[in-house]
Image 1 (cartoon, rainbow, N blue to C red):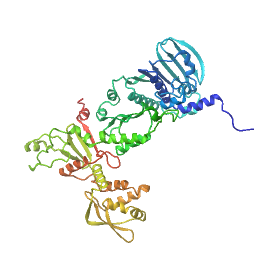
Image 2: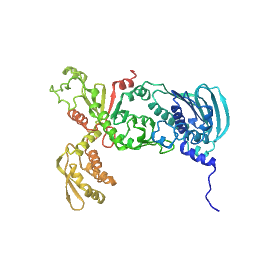
Image 3: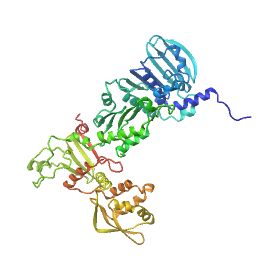
Image 4: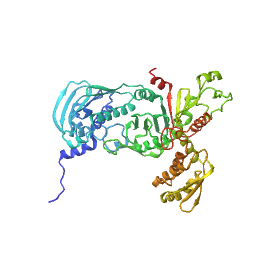
Length: 550
């Protein structure tokens, strides 16, 4: 007797449903998309226990005609496409006809709907219709899902805590709110209102609701329209380092996960430890995007992906990440001139003459109030006043960035040590040294070799500060690069880290001024080569809020 059997319809249905509905947020996603496809301008969502006990979505859309209601819960029942060629030009969220059928298979489902002329209600448990009744509802649809995965206890065990499931739903609704600006969204959890986003005139108004306060002030709008491709977005400035929950990406108004775009954005920001906040909408002709990749519709594929990636990358660098924009708010109508030094002589003018705006005071006032344009805290951080508040530099991270960009651009050069430093390398470190010595020389580190793994360092990059312990740690960290040991950029990061100004080192005012000037002359001034913040900014509003003045 053969071993292959044809699975029963109820088993097939549950397997298919598991590809579409994985947790409560999947239910909300499918129901919200159905509401938007129905033209809803208001969508009210209610959940209990993070959606595990109950999910309800109520909308004022076009509704479902009574004759269509039973077909709507059948697999492949859809009004969105009619023939295979329609898949090439999808303009709606749904099209596969699997959402309601999948939800019905793994829950107790009730749909009450009206197309404006007559209403109806249907109840389905585990894919089996229990009753169909008339309804007095006037317009729109309410879908209520209870006891999700009651007939799939194994799947239910993998759900997270109610709090975590609720947060996923809130994040999802905020993502759709960033796309559908003319739709009013509300979320109620266990009887409490947790989110209310009223309809907005445009994306700018909607962004004020999604990113209130200081976060909105740090956002930079981006709009590009070239060759049928439109890119619209809001991105935080490169000096933004706060925590957030805004990384929204959509293609043709469909929220998607597109790792390549995310990696490109992180690379453009120079891989910071704290990812930037952004809302990014990409629009291309429908025939240039494939949305039929996975039943969840979380993934799409662009036909001209590389072109769109390059276009976005260039636009970010030009309009969002350029130093000129980041410093624009600090520009004054006249060139900066520092106040007189205590000695009475005039200090040098900044290379970036837009960093500070300090009123001139006479010598007596300066002596009385000890006014300084920049100062150092705990020999680690450098403070500087700006027109809108202040900036704070991590002196080590800032100098790392300066050294890294200088040696990568070949502008660093070498300086001979007054007293060459002799190193006795371990066999592993010597092996690494042999593989990387050409790159090290190119970066400005010169040496002489002696027998028994002894190396004498007699030149280091200009403007670096190094001792024997620094060089020992440098070779140790280079040895730890593994497969990246032949990458010039990775070795340059290690060199910059071990030769930069250290925390705990006292700087003079001239040195602080020079550090600020040179940092803001860098291409990526806001992070060190490893992605840590090199400078943070605090506006007067933020400072005032700290003291309860707002």
